[in-house]
Length: 399
Image (cartoon, rainbow, N blue to C red; front, side, top):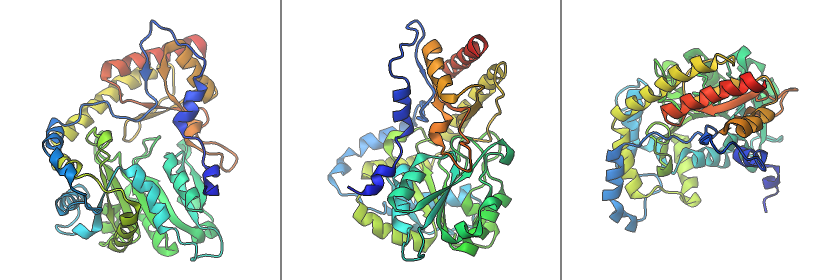
């Protein structure tokens, strides 16, 4: 076995299951699960119909890159969403992927170059973070470097804190915008600074924008848009990861795409032809329909906004809660150890949340997930409101 597998941490939900072992919550309270970011809103019916009506295509091998029609759809969507010029994104700058989780992992395997430096390559990520970033770095035999995100820096990685020797060894920078789990959104000038740093130190930006379509007011700026403002119209050193999982409530479709630097995409496609993870044709056809429709996305945003509007005033009775910039998570500060909080909340109220430390690592003398829990507002509105009331009751009675 690859010895680097031994360096992987247990996945957060494995840790959570172990934490809850042996606890029997109150049977009279229905269980409420707010730990996993799995959308529970209904997916668009028309996409499901397209999927069902094209099952005969399962007799065909799919093309690794995705059909020209799907790639064209994704290219046009990017131009509209990120305020780009017409025909600025070409089909050969887009690849379909079987879920962005797989793509976010495999991009590190494709781009890390051990011949580029005599020292170990560095992969930078925010801290807390989506654990795939770390696993991808470790299995590419690179060194993860964590940038702590807290209230003082608006939960954005402090680019000015990175030493020059780390920048020089950095080959890949994972950035999540809006952030998981914090819901922070980077402003344009921040993204511009990151792009300039990538040009100066020659590293690749992997911009995870899977939550970009769940926002409250203005859509978050994306890395392609920021590139464009700097005259980097070909998106050099930048690659974006998009998904239908959160935008369209289709996590089981495993449908996303990557877009960006043409040279990167070309090499990544070559890698993926060996990697063997092409999206089935029926899924691609359903994806085309989903990307071409914004009405269901607007309804999705409205539903999440209503949840935050209802839940946050309730939680403020007992917690110092701040509304995120975007996405569907609450990064909730708790007054006791986050594991104890999670375990006791489950034991007393049959509500499951995720300890923040499971999404972060010790770095520079601290774990930025300590004394936080992540709450995914994915359940229906009434259930989210009930969960908020139970959280407040738990805090008032036991904290």
